[in-house]
Length: 145
Image (tube, rainbow, N blue to C red; front, side, top):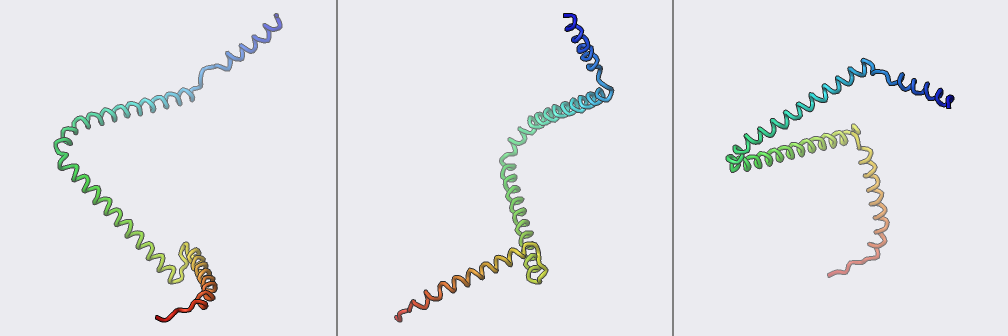
């Protein structure tokens, strides 16, 4: 029993020694993280409060002006979407024309090898179809009217 008591005493002494107070660096890290976290939490609360107050103030104005604002917003959205789509189509067309020009002048733009491969494959299939269809068309006679 005394032997068991002697083995437990060093173990408890090691536990007390290992649980020493945190270092200054850990304390500074904790305080910095806590300060930043609290600051962000306060800013989040202020933002939410400002949003709610702004909504309360703006709601009567939106209700009064809604017969004018709703069609105006819809029109602006449609105009913006139209201009963006038109601009996108213009950029795509300019890019395609630029690619075609570089391909025709032999500057080998990106993807030209795939176009060449597709052209060769289509040509080969057309020749195969011609060889297959030639005997079929020779056998068929067209009756005069």
